Length: 352
Image: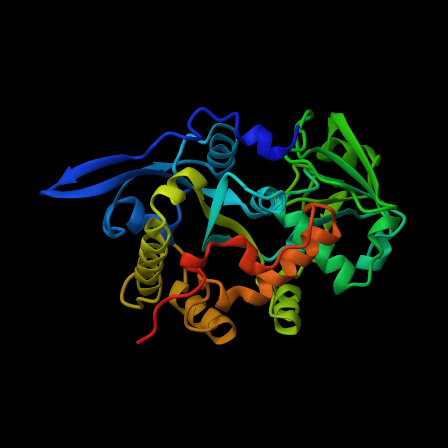
């Protein structure tokens, strides 16, 4: 069964969104699921409103939002794994439409964990070793393997990839993929990455979530202990700022109301602008971190005034890289371009 066929089994795939009357004006009532981000919060709580839309928000852990949206399509709009989204998109007639809003972006040098006794001091040392992964199509893993192949010169076929749950046995892949020729891949549903790291069955792990086996100075350590410095160097060299999650809409909603996509994009932008203004406020601690405003200033020096840009053109380099990584690793059935990921209604905006 293809992932598109699995998606069509969702209970709410073809339901029509409700039109409600508000002050004599008809508006579209849509459900929206995402985790709790400061840069999305004003849209969730109604301080920012999308034109023509009333949103019913669901604030959920990301894993729950992904599962309920992909499997059952319980929401009209949802945060979604970029890796899962591009897998659907490559098969054609995806049940999901992408909006170029990227609520989570994380560099992934921090995602490499190695046994301290295996002589792994640099990426090339991973060749000939075994690496545990939660899922082949996990977005963090796609970016990290892309870094290994393109920037670190690592031959991915010389690594034994072992798929398992991070800290619990039984995790399974959620999308179909076709591994490139020569890739070594094994599923281990009877164990976890943490257990295999501690027993020595695997040499390293590649995971967005730190495995329980990791501890500073212990048997399992980070390959990049000073990962921020290495990630900044990677960004300076490539211009890539990894996008982990995107905002997606049920195709059935978009086809009935294509104007909603741009209304949402504008509203997400406004909510983010309000968040950046709060974080940059030196007069009060708007978020519970020391020097938050100073950190915001430092980020602006490297990433520009808006360190989390939405839209297609300002993210084309990162999107191009992800499309390339996903295809090279067999996550997508065909090579896509950034323009293939989003409808024309949100690929450009009016200029006066």
